[in-house]
Image (cartoon, rainbow, N blue to C red; front, side, top):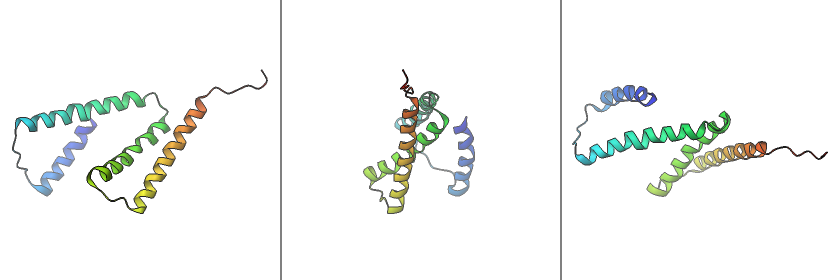
Length: 117
């Protein structure tokens, strides 16, 4: 539902700025669109929600912050996007924040030791 809510205003904006697109439909294009709609979007959102339900809210939030980090690193490796010092600083801070939170959760999940026993 969220994707539909986002797609409608974005489609209107795209038509207003770019005009009506010329699409050359083919069997391959239909397969690609179906894959993106079903597997790459719907399945990925379902899997994400299923996994993140078992995590605390702050862990979920910080873990989702890793998505741009992975995207930027992948774009640097795959298409050669340049990582500036400011961008590198931001990536390091995001990674550090997520790591500290996750390690804190692991540490808090361990049962406390009772030296009196």
